[in-house]
Image (cartoon, rainbow, N blue to C red):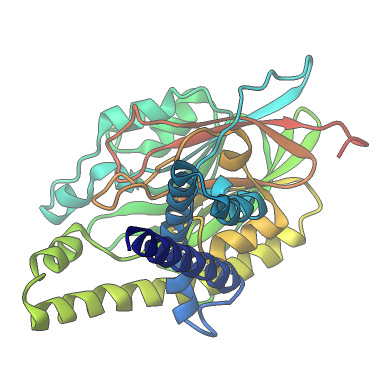
Length: 377
């Protein structure tokens, strides 16, 4: 009798493992579906990390049971290793080639340098510690989203404090805020000369939106590299939205209302970013130079947006980073929504998430790239 129950339990676990594998396959397929054509695909893809973790737990379980069923989750891990690489990066430190031409790029959503609350109160202030951290960082290029600079102000003029004071070249894609006269938007600072630059205004946002992309062509000691700073549509989920949903558990009507609100916000974001990434990639594909695409993409690695970018370029964290690489400094844990991608002609040799700078709702990220000599691309 005990043997019968043991066999039944084993078969139940096998069926559950098969269901997880089917979940994984469905999620991978949904990564290819534009959410603006079929929005439920965005939610299925969003759930992929859960399936990947469960499959790994099944591997441990079957190993513990010393069952030949271990080959099922093992085969999934082998065939889907690239997807596990999106979840956790494992890379050894690489030495730069002798005499290599390098370019270090910092990307950081600076959260208006924490001026939001002060602007509302009519007393504009910025986090001087954050400004100084950026200004003194050794990177060659800074790609800053939600940049803020107060016009006609010495104290809050961050174009001067980060750029002019350190003889950096600058390209700004900003708009004037309504509440006080200030510049807000996406800005690129560079120690190398900027040959040209422009803005990509997303078709589904206004020109007064912070969601946009700026690009510049840089003269890096005779080589031209195109760098993009991108800020895509926000998830628009606030801490109170999460808290309200959790607190509504037990109250069916309230929980349904709050969960529908979260789902609606996620759905709108999936659709908006899927359209924005198509517009961005059209521009990237037309570049005559190697490109680095940085920014706050507001989408996790298991999304249509990320997958489309990965089809065209390499992800710097996956190639040269280590660990989970969380970049969102908020109530939702383990989110990597800030990224750097790069094309042929470049190679990432180092990637760092700067947890030592926790003053924004995003952590800064930086990567060092080697510019390959022509003929080795």
